[in-house]
Length: 367
Image 1 (cartoon, rainbow, N blue to C red):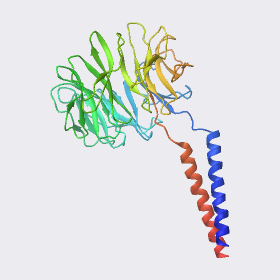
Image 2: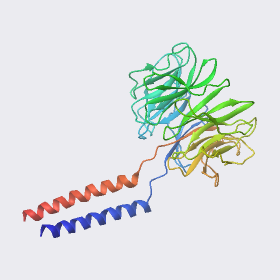
Image 3: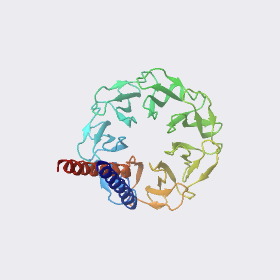
């Protein structure tokens, strides 16, 4: 009798899981949020909107300039740079703009905050030592520590995907170079080692490569290098400025921009074959591209409708849409991290049905 009941309960559980999956796939996760910076209020403010451009709201909402927004890995916090206390400090707030906290609270300037992928640290740039250094701190602002500790200027820190290393640009060797250090600041390695200017590093999602822009011959090109400085190679040979590389979440593409005096475009390139295509193909200025977490679309900034606006397009450049649709300049789009609502819903369904079945089985045995 027990085996028959167990078989029946198992069938009910399997049917419930199937229904959960079907329902959640018919009603997919809501559009992720996009953060961006806007001048529509007369100063730089941090706004949030859906990926279709709806529900735009001012999150920072202060006369001081706010910039450099960055999502926490779990999407529950936003870290940003604010001048609301008279200098540039690192702050954090909730995605609805509440619970704002000054994390650095230092009389000198702090900016360029970045969360570690494991969510345990925030790295940032600071000039509190009479030059620009790379610091890290806990998400509550404690344990602020100078990691780079050198006389040059160190900028644009980026975490490795495993949160164990940090890449940044520095002029400690007179020209800008790309360096990698451990998360505690130890073992600095010059990975670019060139006579030109190397800037804007970006880790690949698997941590195996670092992309950066380097000055080559007469202009900047996109380069790739291993984190130990080996296998350095020139990815682009465009003979026009190629800047600001960003990896796709799957690591199979890089996007970069080609800024010029009055125009520019966003390109994507295969990091292995070097095959590339122009995604925006427009006579106006396009740049500052950012991948969506599901690898299905990109955001970028364009002035094709007058002021700089936030746009969205498919990853092949098709179907561009103006999301911000405002008469002021908007820039620095940052897409929220992905949250797997399908699996979350399934697990909730399993837990609820499981509790129900346990209650039914207990009642059956009792009577």
